[in-house]
Image (tube, rainbow, N blue to C red; front, side, top):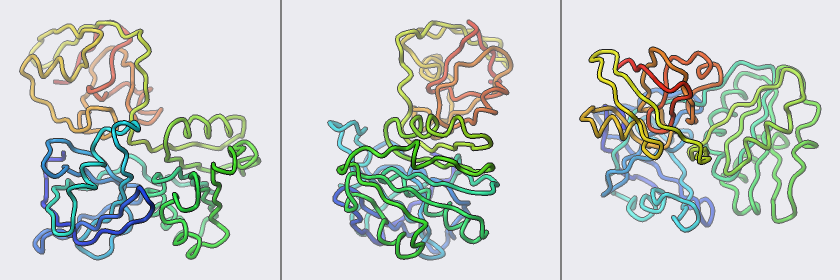
Length: 317
């Protein structure tokens, strides 16, 4: 969680699909809505649980409320239990603690935009598309789900933007992404948010097209545990203490086990809370927060999932 936590009230709840619920979270009168940019997400402290999850912000319904949409994924289907807990506990009038909005998926300046939304991955696209629409730049959105009934906000998007919205249902067969994204004009930014390998599939579909960049939002960390994790040493620059991180233990857990108190939230490399500066050493980045450019600069890391390639790291701690 962020350090500034506000207790909000569930003021409205709306069913979007058989699995996705929309929640309007009303802030107290003395806590005006914090300004947020398109693509932002909100830290939500689950009711009756120490767990925090991140959900993309949709357009606010009033000056003092946040709107999120949550896909109910039970643990047996690959979920982590967070969405199920929220669906169960966030009834009308319930209290929910939230942090300030943060943005790891901001809108970049481009000549053309393609938004690819897989199911509930449409949520950050709502604000991103609205901002591009206001700018007057060309854009299209490709919505993907099993059926139209499984695609949140589809009818609203089609009603508002018409032919800029294309839907493909996987029940009719797999979409040929190469054909759907062929011949994009130079200067196109492709934004992707969705489950599984969608981001990799999109990147592969456009990799041979010049001046086309892909931007990805994922709230599920990639599975990078390939069995090759090695132990490494970490030194704290301030105290000079050195610890060994075992292959099966995260850097964050190791530091906490040594009595070091660090900010953390998701513990899966998707929220950015545990970012720590790197003084020296080569980081094995395993997060979904840093951009490729930030990774190459090697100046910070997410200690909950990332590791070391050089045998030793010195951290700005």
